[in-house]
Image (cartoon, rainbow, N blue to C red; front, side, top):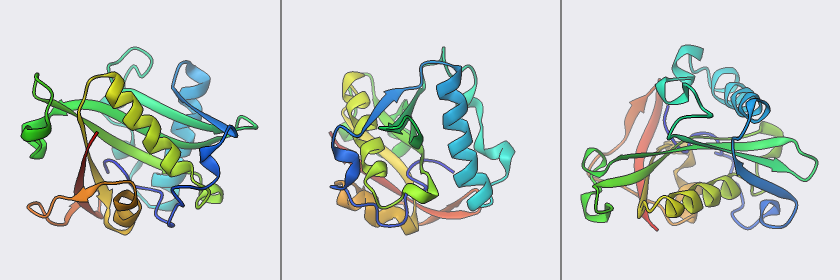
Length: 183
């Protein structure tokens, strides 16, 4: 279960998450990490039935010291409402050689999740903007993700295109499509 998985309820890309009512930051301490994990578990394991051992993987080890970026979006009250994970990957492995940085890397966004009771308020779009901003900071010129097919429309509204050469595929028992966007 890779990226762009959870905000499937037509999150309005111009809704509440746009103002000064929340913050998107890199996970910086144990409290942030625990909040991010709790949200991911609630969405992917509890709601969608992904086996717990598949949800936390090798890219989640040592989250405060790794080169993998874990993004956490909190509302104005400090409640964790959305998460995303970003890592640099080999562009060739994702059919994105033409968009790659000089070192052959692009960003891969994964584990996008929005709290069930906060969907449709713009928080998924806020998490994706934060991930894209972080990719730019890391000089990664494009983003790839594996979106659950039911969430593909959300990502299309954010400027992502389905990679038709790959087609639909199953990941952790859920149908996905690969999508990409140049930044």
